[in-house]
Amino acid sequence: MSNSTVRTKKTKIMAGGKETPRQKMIGMMYLVLTALLALNVSKEIIEAFVAIDNNVQEANQAVRKKGNFSFESLKEIVEDKTDYNRAITAKEWYEIAQKIRQLTDENVRYIDELKIELLEVCGEDLSKVVTNKQSIPMQIDLAEVVAKDQYDDPMRILIGKETDLKNPTGKGMEVWKRRIEFRNKITELLGNYKSPDGKIHYKFDANNPTQRAQCNPEDSTIIRQLFEQLTKKEYRKLHDMDNVHWVGATFDHAPIVAAIAQLSSVQTELLNAEAEALAHIRSKVGGGEYSFNKIMALAYGNQYVNPGDSIKMEVLMAAFDSHKTPIVTYVHPYSGEKITLTSKQYKEGKGMFTFKPNKSGKDTLKGTISIQNKNGQWKNEEWYMPFTVGSPAGAISQPEFQVLYRDYDNQLIGAVSGYPNYKLIAKSNVTLTQTSKGYIARPSSGQLAEIAIVGVTEDGTTTQIGSYNYKIRKLPKPLVFLGGIENGSTVTKQVIAAQRKIFTRYDESIPLTATFTPVTYRVSVSSYPREIPGTGDVLNQDALRIINQARSGDRVTINVEYREPSGRIKKVNAFFTIQ
Image (cartoon, rainbow, N blue to C red; front, side, top):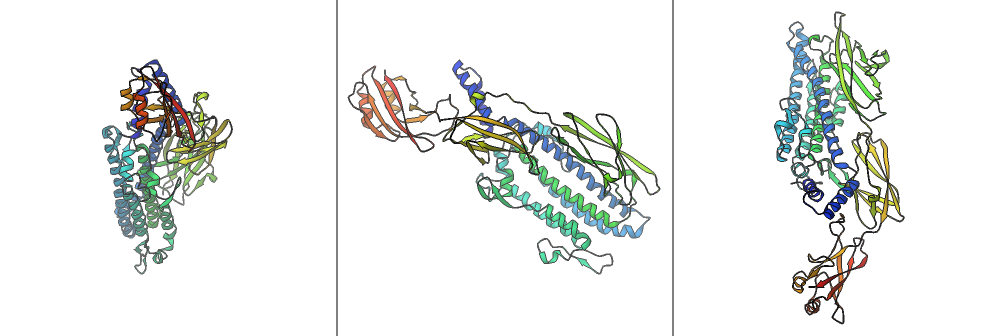
């Protein structure tokens, strides 16, 4: 059972069931304070990962179609009996394309199998989550995942032990190694071949810098781009820890939906590399004689935006010919106006335009793309792309409970909708330290602290979402417990002797996790003339002796000096009445 599941069950027990009115009130206070400290993070962030993975999967299918077009186009040229010489050239490149396709499928399938393993280990029903296992990549619906916040098993499988962030031992390392091998093999496949006349053998050895320059200059740009795209920094700083491996930084405390979304993004890198490599191979065969019976219109754009943002579109015909510019139109979803792009809005066979929605909710951009065939006839295809404009979010809070305690690690977690990440910024009277689970707030002087939350885009641009004031208060004093005996209880001498250990802690009415350590104590009995001193957290024999001599109705007082989390020594006392 995951930590998050345990917390959920604890919350349910405290918030409901057969409880006294006081317990219900305490449970409600616990829920409210927890919600305020978490800033409503769990559901929003988890659901954001579901939406992100949906978008990534849709993009992966589109990129796969792009690669399929180049691959099938090569195959058609190989099988074309009307142009023998071109078919021979195409066959040599088609064999390389087949190796690239096999290489991509093996690595994408490996990640799919890893996703299945994560889902099975977390007890998910694959018949509901996996919607199409045969497609490459397979299609899944993370909305059907029950334990979306489960992270213990994903971390164990992908990283290994929680302490393995610097040197992971889990299957995430196999993903890392396969990415490197994929990068090396795909660039070597593009760079190692003989010239058409057989006189030159171009070479590209990913592990040998001296041979990298021996590739065909016509291939150097695409090879360099793919090599750089597939190269990531292996070690980085994570919070306050140096030299954390990419696997550890990527999957540290990542819930299953986040881990799967990260794996989908790795598949995106592989599929993009394959599509670019196959398109480059297709271009080397030459000619603009495409088969128009399999033309497909492709549209790309960011499908989720915040209010005021723009949707940037790229629309192209898969049967791209550098000598023929397509004609792209789109229908304005609000006015219904049909708009045709101008000549300045085309580049490398793509029609590009920007559309700025002004309504929240889901809608669709659609239009047509047309291109001439070799006989001068226009071939038309429709395209469409759904998009979503986020709505402003609202929340209700209780300002009385927005409190930061001095000399205490106040844990804060933020959440923003419509952004892949967020930051908390200290505005006044507080310092913030980022951790793997959120932020630690330590207030300073003054009565109020101000903290701002900002949304962070993928390119690092920040937008302030809101600013919040917190009251600064001293850490509440703990209560003294003798074993399980509460302050003010009436008990027998035998019970006191049996539960002689002193505890200084909060009861269930205060949902803080501060640790207090008893240092010294003094015990007195109302019928005994002097106090008995002691050190540590266990009553000594002298203290037990005077308690044993006490009469019914006598009051036993324990004055305790304890150490706060800050290291300061403070005092608190408790009393018990002898039955």
